Image 1 (cartoon, rainbow, N blue to C red):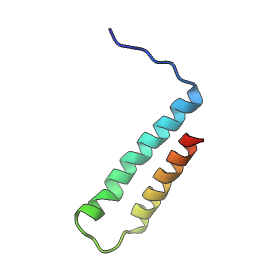
Image 2 (image 1 turned 60 degrees about the vertical axis):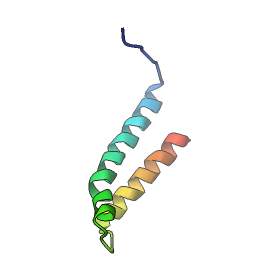
Image 3 (image 1 turned 180 degrees about the horizontal axis):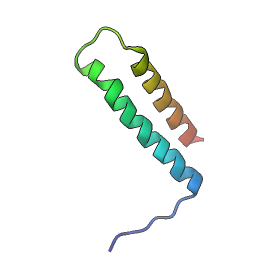
Length: 60
């Protein structure tokens, strides 16, 4: 039997946002780090910023 946990919708939506931005960060930012690129393009920087904002929103 699966355990059910209830959370408020607002918290759920924040967690979904964090998960979404983590996926974007993984696709756009981490390959640059892993391959040793000497610069990050605008998409990678934007992904990092959006992930950081999602984390901050969740913490509030």
